[in-house]
Image (cartoon, rainbow, N blue to C red; front, side, top):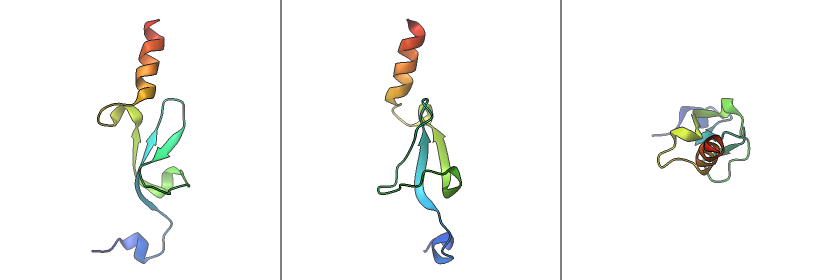
Length: 65
């Protein structure tokens, strides 16, 4: 099965865009350098990532201080 957007030459990414509490974004797709929301079908807050994210732990630590 092929991706309709790939076949139609629509600019998109198959990875998941993860937005960190600092506002920085990263993509799970190796080599993805265009981190625009519209290119990604799935966008998650880093707190939703299975196993958590280091930046979430850092925020909780700062809030506890």
